[in-house]
Image 1 (cartoon, rainbow, N blue to C red):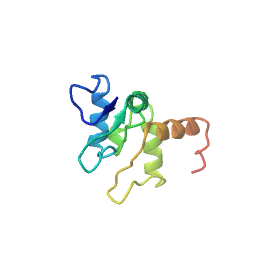
Image 2: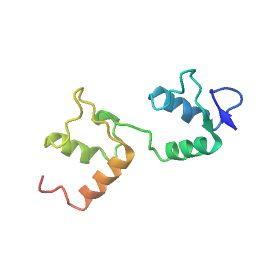
Image 3: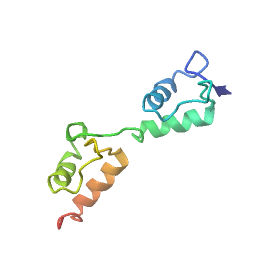
Length: 110
């Protein structure tokens, strides 16, 4: 089945993820606004969403407690400055890598 819109035809379990992707501008649809999503696409999006792939942290305050010390260290040392608007644009995957490396001491000389 092809889902063109968030409506009664789309499974309820997929609607929050699809709406999140629309709100972030990642899904825009075609010139008619149709999303053209398949069941497989919905499942992939929901799995990625469930592990935090679509999360983005733009300020120190938004970063989860488990990663905040590492990210604060990067900001304090000038290693991480964000984009032209000051947004950090960090994903969960980036946080995991930075924290693991920090715990291994890789950044101790920065």
